[in-house]
Each structure stands twice: as C-alpha cells, then as structure tokens.
Image 1: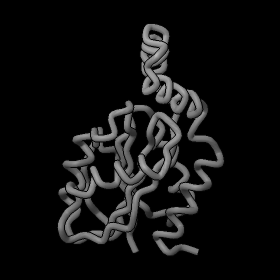
Image 2 (image 1 turned 90 degrees about the horizontal axis):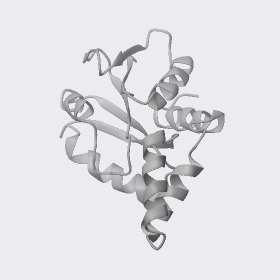
Image 3 (image 1 turned 90 degrees about the vertical axis):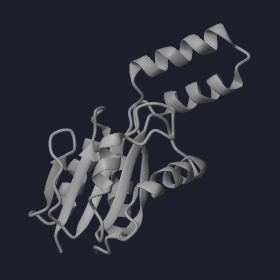
Image 4 (image 1 turned 135 degrees about the vertical axis):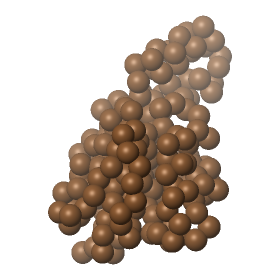
Amino acid sequence: MQYQISYYSPNGHAETLVNAFCQMLPHDTYVSNLEEECVTYADIYLVGFDMGGTNLDAIPFKVIEYLEKLDGKAIVLFATVPFIPNEAVEGRIHNNVLPFLPDECDFRGLYLCGAEPSNTLLQDLRRLVSQQPENTRAKHWLERCERAVGHPDRNDVLKACQFMRHVLELN
C-alpha cells in the first residue's frame, strides 16, 4: 500500500502532525506541501490543513483543488483549528469539506486538532471583549482560543496517530 501525506500548513500546526505520521507510516511514504507542489502518487492519501481563524466554513482553496484530483482514492483528512474543538465543530467542518471530496473516493474520516491561535487573532478577540464586555460570543471564542495556546501538544499528536492507525487499519 502506497501512502501520501499532502498538507497545507501556513501556521505550521498541520506540519507538526505530518512529522508524527511520517514516523508511523512506511519509509517510502511520499510527503508533499501543497504550497509548493500538487502530486498524486499513492493509493491512500492523508490530506491535512490549518484553519487560521474562527470561520469554520473556510476550507483552504489549495486543499479543495487537491481533493478534486483524488478520484478513486482512499482519503483521510486532518485539520487544525485555533481553539480546542468539540464534536459540533468537527461535524461542521466535516460537512463543509464533504462537497469537495470526489464522488468516487473512499473517505475514511476527519481528525480535528486544536492548535495555538495567532497572536493577531488573540489580540483581536481581546480587543473586542474589552470594547464589548457584554458580547458573550466574543468571550466564548476568546476562552476557546486561549485554551488552545501550546497546542498541538504531545497528547494531541498521540491521539492523531491513534486515529490514523485506526482508520488505516495499522497495528
């Protein structure tokens, strides 16, 4: 079985997971950064991406373009978000990415991982909360983003690897 890990990671968080996946998969696994190249060599594709903000509908265009090329292939997705995700967030991102998967593919699942938010995002949310202390939505997002500082951590990486072993049926 040939594996390929393709990723878009402007924040470096998805790349952290890529490095861990490379350690657990066969040594001939091909890795491609979607910012540099867009190739398709394998039977099973692990496709990862960073989502930079709180807009859960914004699947990176480079990822969408790449997914369209994987007709007939097995696909596993992994993504990082700048807060600690929950099942509702995972479901929303899952539903947002489904229309971009090829009609004929073996979709094996999505792993979602919390990741440290950018300083700009944290500053913007803090400013909003200070200007609008009654804004419960802004407070909620700020709390979730602050909890993600320092992620993905070792435990996140271990969980991501467990997920991949399970969906790829590796021992």
